[in-house]
Image (cartoon, rainbow, N blue to C red; front, side, top):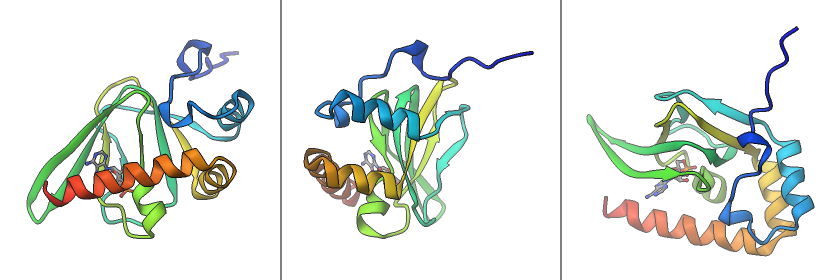
Amino acid sequence: EHVSEPTSTEGALPQIPLFSDLPRDAFIALFERCPLRRVPEGATIIEQGTRGDAFYVLCAGRVRVLRRIGAEQRELATLGEGAFFGEMALLSGSPRSASVVSASEDTQVLELSARVLADLARRFPPVAKALRRFCRQRLLSDVVN
Ligand code: CMP
């Protein structure tokens, strides 16, 4: 019988700056609790305008952040391994501000439910602080883009 390989990056945990101050056991627990999803190139992870209920950490590969305004589509950013996305809708309660699409064949995202993220932010204030800082910066950057 075929047993699929663990999808994680060759057994090694990826470097995630957002989680760099987490105790190792809390970091590992996240990978045990949360699904790690492979996303084929071109597939949409977040769709602009929808309600947000999850947060994503990019464990491998690349994604593009795209905003549609009328008929026009603009690329707001490209994110690489170790980045995160989907925090804005969860922090603000607003619909997804942009679409996020896989831009590589080996994209893997760790999916945290809103509840898991809220719990993490409550237990580890530096995580909450970093989320707010990035959210603010991205919001400002998107206003001019
Ligand atoms: P959210 O609005 O929940 O869903 C789309 C996500 O794209 C958003 O959260 C951010 O995580 C991400 N995003 C939006 N704008 C930028 C940007 N300028 N740079 C990087 N990521 C962004």
